[in-house]
Length: 326
Image 1 (cartoon, rainbow, N blue to C red):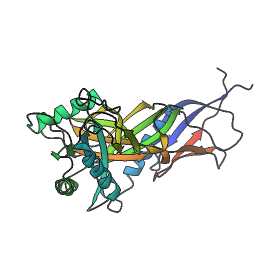
Image 2 (cartoon, rainbow, N blue to C red):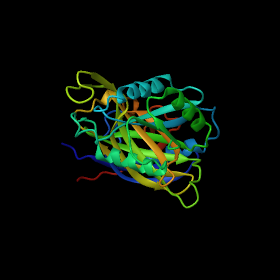
Image 3 (cartoon, rainbow, N blue to C red):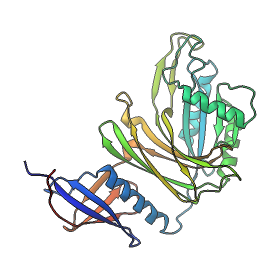
Image 4 (cartoon, rainbow, N blue to C red):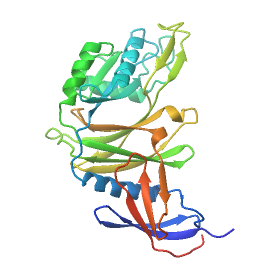
């Protein structure tokens, strides 16, 4: 078997900036389609994103608004809130707001007759942090939090729509997500941010990524919802802080493992920037995992072009050549 071809690449942005990223090993070319190694891909994405951001103003887009629902399958008041979250997502965009939902299943109901298979102590702790921010004496379900700015009973549709409308008028940064497969059960996620509002004085901001899964169903056989068939949307499967946003422009990347039982067609990747103390969401975005594809083509022999589905910019990649074995 022939040894792989070792090629150094130079990334040339649309603006002409020249950034070396290499060496990169690819199979000896017999066609135009090649798979991008995550390290090279991340470099491509960052250059492409910066070129896109520098390309000038675009038509006004709906403002992404993050809607978090703290819920549990063990709580009889929660199914109505789960339905409301789904309705908000389905109706989006509305009144200038693009809804990004997070169904966050807490674990303190698990000891009361039914263990919620989506519950997480980490999400319970996230709710506790909000309780401190909003000066609540205790945590409860269902609770909805809109853009980290307002909290209320999660089944109250009128209050929810009012909070979303107000949040959509607040300043937000622009968040972009790019995703590529790292291997069969892992994805590489790159997040780039621009025009980020400044956090309140003395506060800091974190870049957070998550994976959500929709169209999930459970047959509840015990507890307050005994005998009910529950349907969930935007269930948080993964949530982690990956970086600190220290300026109005920021970038970060991370590899995320995907469990074998997560249905890939129903997964979304979410990214947002959040004040660490004030909890305000400064910007957010969502990308459907199914629509995230990456490819490299070689239409002109010596020049390769990186493209990402739904991306505005392309990055030109010049092969510098050479062989090596390893």
